[in-house]
Image (cartoon, rainbow, N blue to C red; front, side, top):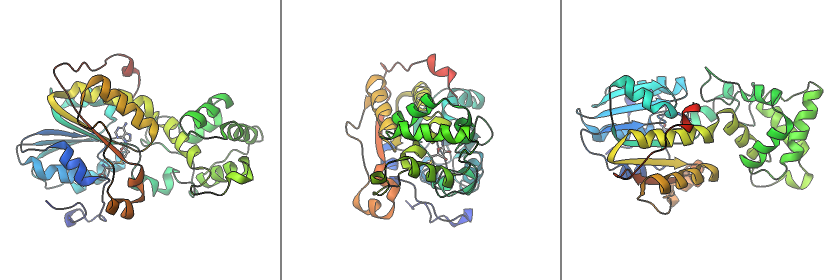
Length: 316
Ligand SMILES: C[S@@+](CC[C@H](N)C(=O)[O-])C[C@H]1O[C@@H](n2cnc3c(N)ncnc32)[C@H](O)[C@@H]1O
């Protein structure tokens, strides 16, 4: 099996996805399967999956980011299985499958959060070095941007996001500082300006450390902008409905809130194949800093699995 990045036909720079070997192993792929890559991104996992499915297999790739779908189209051109790529949220998996006339699938992979292609995109405002408008949306075609939310969200709610989604100690001070700047019409407009505001708002002792003092605020704002936790809950339920009995769900999460949600969902709705999450080995930890926080969990749908319906329908 070749590694992603060795495929020259896309003309794109090599891309090494997190926990590649572990994902392929966890998916237990066979020829002829129907597999959903719910977060196809730059197609790094997808190209590896495609190699196992043969001409009778089907690979369905979703992404909330239209530019990722365009890249995946180039990367997956010419692979053996049937490929269907859709610009859609995994929360809308039922609808996507209905549109394709597919009743059930054999495997679902979700590699959560943002991709390096988004972090490195200056127009996305995900990095605290960015000098363009604070957007932070995965889907830049719909919904309010992070800046819209900073302009309109009450201080109390901003504080809650920083506390709950960012696990930020100084949530109150930071929310206060943002709202003061808002009153003076000096709201941070770029990632760089927001990072500076956070640095000024936290006590001097919290300004130096291993991670940038704005890291948690950026995480919180990104989660809120994309409604990541609600969408994840809806997506897990949709994946569970879509799987045939015996089908597998493989999820990689990157922070404790996501992982807790996945762990609880697996325990309540599926049969877990990993009691403890799989994490990156020493080689990957060295070469890819993002792999440090990656946790992979695997579960199987059984005849008793009873995926939730209803509440999640409100979240897209
Ligand atoms: C970590 S990257 C995936 C990388 C991919 N596995 C690869 O090998 O290139 C996560 C991707 O998920 C997408 N995403 C985030 N939320 C989503 C959602 N609700 N539905 C579909 N895609 C989503 C992001 O736009 C991003 O491209």
